Amino acid sequence: MDIVATLGTQKTTIHFASVEVVEALLPRHAVLVTDENVAAAWPAFAGTRKTIVVSPGEGSKRIPTYERVLESLAEAGADRSTPVVAWGGGVVGDLAGFAAGTYMRGVPLIQVPTSLLAMVDSSVGGKVGVDLAAGKNLAGAFVAPQDVYVATGFLATLPERELRAGMAEVIKYGFIMDAPLLDTLGGDLEPLVARCIALKVQVVDEDPYETLGRRAILNFGHTVAHAIEHATGYGPVLHGEAVAIGMVAEARLARDLGLAPADLVDEVERTLVRHALPTRIPEGVTPEQLLEAMRRDKKAKAGRLGFSLVSEPGKCTLVPNVPEEAVLRALSNS
Image (cartoon, rainbow, N blue to C red; front, side, top):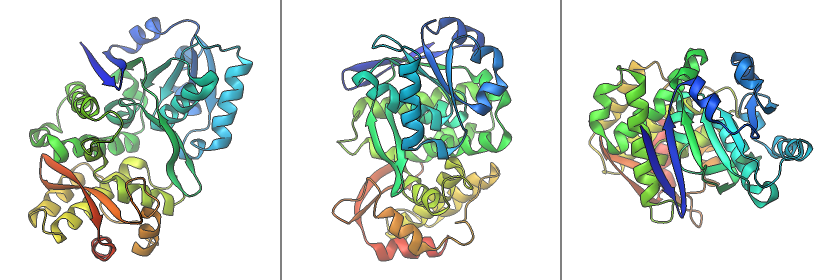
C-alpha cells in the first residue's frame, strides 16, 4: 500500500515495506545520512552505500553539523542527481533534509525513518531545518522528499524510551483530529502508523506551506514543548516527552480560556500516563523561562503568542493573540 502526498507541486510517495525491501529499492548511487546509533544497529544496511554518520541527539541539529554534511556530500562527489537518504529519526530527517534542499540548490531527498516519531510525523510533510541558539528549527525550509520508505521493522532496535516518546505524537493525532484513534493505542503498531501518516498527509495536502492555519493543528503541544527543549538544553528531555508535557499544559490553557471543558485536561493526562509519558514541567524550569522561549516561537506574531488548542478530542484550531498572563497561569499549574 502506498500513500501519495502533495507539498505544493511536489508529490511524495509513502511506501510501506520491510527493511530488506527498502534496502533493495534505494538507489545504489544514493548517499545515506544517519547517526551512530542507527548505523551500529543496522551495520549491513549502513555498508551498502556511501554513508555520512553524525552523532545522535538534538545536538547534531546545528549549523556546524549541517556544514559537515554538506562538505561530506561534496567530498563524496555527489551531484544534482545524487539522492540524499535521511536514514534515522527526526533529527537526522531534519538535518539531512535541510542539506538536501540546499546542496547544489537542491538534490533529491528520500526519507527512511527509523523511529516511531519520525514515521508518524517528521518524515512526512517536508519541514526540514536546524536549531539556532535562540530556538528550535529557526533555520529551515520546506523540502519535500520524493519518497518516504516506512519499515516498522526498524523499530525492533529502538530503545523503549524512544518508542514511548513516539507515542506522544500518535496520541496527538487522536486529540487534534481523530478521537477514535485514542481507543486503538494498545493495538498493532503497523496500522496505527499507517493511520497517523494518512492523517498527516490529509493536513499537509490542505495546507502545504502552513499559510492557511489548517496545518498549525499539528503543533498541539509543540509551543510549550519547544520551549522546554530550549530551557533544558536540547537533550535531557526527548522531543516526544516534551510534546506530552506540552499537550497537558496547552489543554489546561484551552480550559482556562473557556475553549475546552474541564475534563479535557484529565483525559489528556490520563492517556499520556497510560503510556508512561511525563506530564509535568521538569524540575528547575520556570514558567517565566518557558514564556521567554515561546516569544521566539514561529507561531508568535508581533510579540503575541499563538497556540494550537484542542476544544474536544478530535477538534483543534490555531488560537492567536493568547494573553501571556493566561499562559503563565497554565504553566504554573503544570
